[in-house]
Length: 238
Image 1 (cartoon, helix red, strand yellow):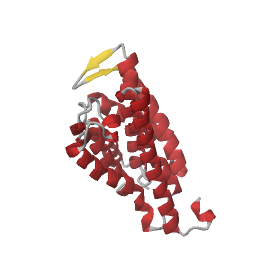
Image 2 (cartoon, rainbow, N blue to C red):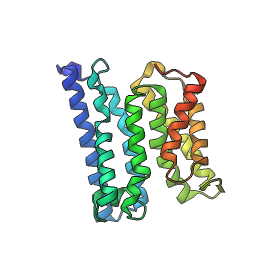
Image 3 (tube, rainbow, N blue to C red):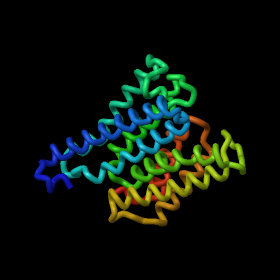
Image 4 (cartoon, rainbow, N blue to C red):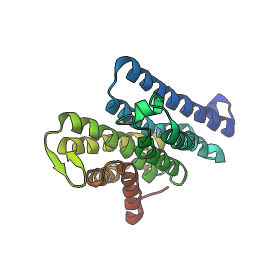
C-alpha cells in the first residue's frame, strides 16, 4: 500500500511501525482515562488491552515483505517487554499499565500474563511472520482468549473446572471469536492461504487449550498448542 505513496520499502515499513506505536500507546492512554474518569472496570480494561494488542497483527498487511525492515513489526512488542519488566518491578499503583492491565492493582501481575503475551507476539512476528500458525496463534490469543473471560464471568451459568474455573458459555465464545478473528486476519494478511476448515480446526484446538490451561499460563499455552499442531499436521507455513 505505502509503495503507492512513493515511499521506499524501508521508509514504508518505518511508517507502519510508527503507526503501531501510536495505536498501542493511544489505546493504553485512552483506557487509563476511562478507568480514572469513568471507573471502567479493570477486568474490562485488561481485556480490551488484550484484544487491542492481538489486533496489531492487522498492521502486517501494510508491511513490505521484500525488505528486512519487515521485522520492525515487533518493535512495539520488544519495547513493551522492557516496559512491563520495569513496571512489574518498580511501577507505582498509579501507573497506566498497572491500572489498565492488572486485576488487583498489583504491579507484579505485569510480569505474568501481559509479559508472556508480548513475548509470544514477538516470536509470532519474527519466526512465524505472515504464516498461518503465527496469525491464528495471535488471533485466537487476542480475540478468543480476550472475549472468553468477559462472557464467562458475566453470563456463564454452566460452570466446569479442570485446572481453573471456566464456563461453557465462555468456551463457546472463545471458539466463536477465535474462529472469526483468525478468518478475518488470515484473509487480510495472506488471503491466498485462507482455508476455513483449517482455521476452524485450529480454533477448536485453541479453545480446548484455553479450557485446560491454568490462569496466567494461557497466554503461552494457546499459541504453543496452535503452532505445535501446525507442525505435527504439516499445515502450510508459506
